Image (cartoon, rainbow, N blue to C red; front, side):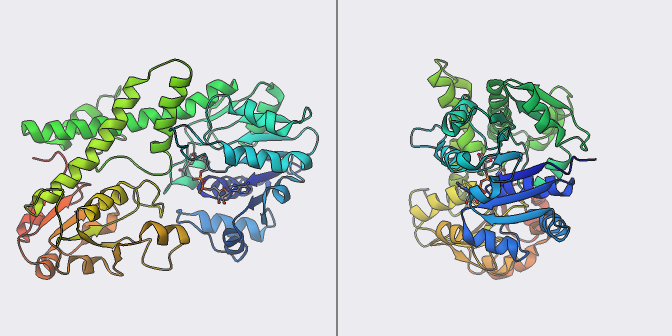
Length: 439
Ligand code: NAD
């Protein structure tokens, strides 16, 4: 049973903060979540969640009705009565590739005067080595402990990942503070790794770097498959069944993106550089990812018989915009990066994504400026010269390919960047097909 006398504060109600708050409340803790964005706080207090995340709305509303979860404006109101405060604010990429710690530092300065003596402040945001100390410096409170507890959830499966994690990592100089944070996860059956702050902070970056490396690796293998006439699905099957390798994160595609891998991989290179190590392997991983996007643009140009620098008059039907299925997150989406290159070359892009057919958030509106949005998937085919599958939404696989041929005209090509369709089905409908690494 959780210690119900412990009060939790969560600063930031984005993908990580909201999931953290809702899941801890679900586990029986009392949680107050604060955000500086009044739109988010109002939506949450009205029973709506501002992001797409499977199972989260139910969890939030159940805990609210039990009186275990509250939403307030700002960090101070969230931290005031808390025994443990989770910082879940952004750590975007700074101008030089390093992680920008200003949100963390700002939040720490805000809550410092109201923290209870003995309170524990937890860095759940992804922060570079040394950030536990940086937060201590901002707090200037000898009676408060700072602990690192990096988060490994994936957007789209955030609730499941939080409640059934592979492990929980806690980094702290003070064992008692670490155990206090560890006890919050008591009702979850998972190993808890307690280590020092620098190791905990490094674990998070190393994990994301490794996963990005797996995807870059399989994308490079896919390019090789195309060159030598092999089939990437067979190759992945062959290598993934080796238990030392494993089959997860070996799906070829348009490259990795999202709010974490791009900034974290660059931050990893930067952290290493600042400490005198040239992490050339990680640089290669990033380069392969950049090349993969260019390769996708080349595929589109080839499909319409043009050079990638001149696509004027070409209409591209785009299936999906988010960086992966199951989320509404457009941050660093490969779709958006590729679309930007296509538009720069003069193409017109008509897109459908299940998360952008209703009201758009201010971020979505700004990101999607210049892209024509369809309210039905099939409408992207109208007059399209080429169709691109950017996101692997499972429902896309049910697209009526005969209707596509009717509305776009037979003979156009589907550039299937997620290998979602069977090439034989696409060809049977009279359309051309180009996947990633497929024979
Ligand atoms: P996000 O942008 O979705 O949410 C951050 C929230 O913090 C925003 O709602 C913002 O308004 C709020 N905020 C900023 N400053 C604040 C302040 N001073 N007081 C109160 N609220 C404030 O970000 P996210 O995706 O949840 O990521 C947060 C951190 O977690 C980042 O460091 C990220 O790298 C890390 N992380 C993210 C994921 C993921 O999949 N999104 C997974 C693991 C770790």
